Image (cartoon, rainbow, N blue to C red):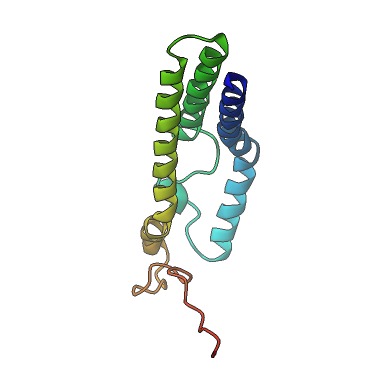
Length: 145
């Protein structure tokens, strides 16, 4: 059972390591595409940088997933080594990973208002009454039964 636990921890660690790797590989191109699209729409191309938004790997976008992957890898190694307190380490590390994922989920759920607030000054024609043209999602009319 320890091998299964350690294996799953290592797989989760690899998933977290993929975050800065993907951002490093594709972030620069994505940033350039966003800035080109902003320019095409007549918005200042510096608005993302002015609000601390970036698509490349740097800052907490690198150290947070690497730190989580390191903690998971440590837990997996301790588990495979059969250390008596490995179960406690696994519970603590995995609980913290769940809490971090909850924070990430909350951040994703609140992204629309924060991005809208960042872009609103740069987009004078943005409707003041809505936070986004597509959020909250419109309910579809239910088919008549």
